[in-house]
Length: 321
Image 1 (cartoon, one colour):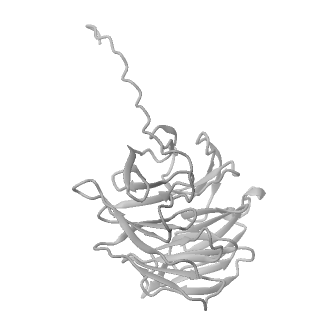
Image 2 (image 1 turned 180 degrees about the horizontal axis):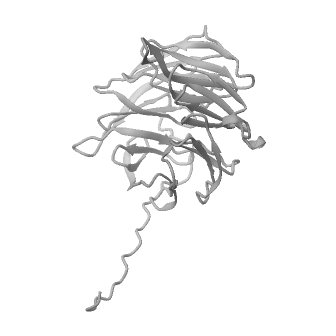
């Protein structure tokens, strides 16, 4: 069994009026944890001590920013609104975004320019790139596999379709050849949180035995250093780590000491740290590191400095100004 996680000092909000942490992400090359607030502010926290680094406002649909806060590009669709976007890697030359007008758009990660548009059968709520496949989860509860090499010419742009949940899909993760989903079920004709984490074989889309989670799965995360393990998190802070290739193995359970509810989660690239943001602006940390190990697991790039803002234009005031 892997080393157990333990609580370490949380990162508290510097503001007297805490804002919900709506997004968390560990930097892959620096000792930084990035946090997104409900107000549209991105903040870098340096190391486990939570020293505050660059902080800047973002907005304008989908965009790309430097770590110092300089905007690189915006993508603003002419019709519809951005719902979600996929992950990207150094080997891929595109990222994918879904719109609420039943469209999926391929974008250049360098310039943000639209490459092509694909109609979809439903609004896509989650997008995940795995190997050469694009996996999507939608509001109608369907899990779809898209092969980007074929031009996605089939109906709805999907190569394979399966019904994962009665209502919408709320979470989608891939690990190795496994696909994990959480979503909304139906009870007495009304939406109800599905207590099961659904599992599918990516190669055949064959359903595997689901994982029951009575506390209600709100977030799921694949563990980077375990190809078949997943962390299931409830809104109340209950964490269950399961190895789906060996269900009979010992499951890890942890409970966060929180006074509110979880709004976002993230796991470091080496799975040494787990971060959980709550509705009051506090980031709770769990670690299995021995000593002062960086978030990214090694001595990487130095932490960034905030970009210098552009100087204001020199306006010559005249009678006609």
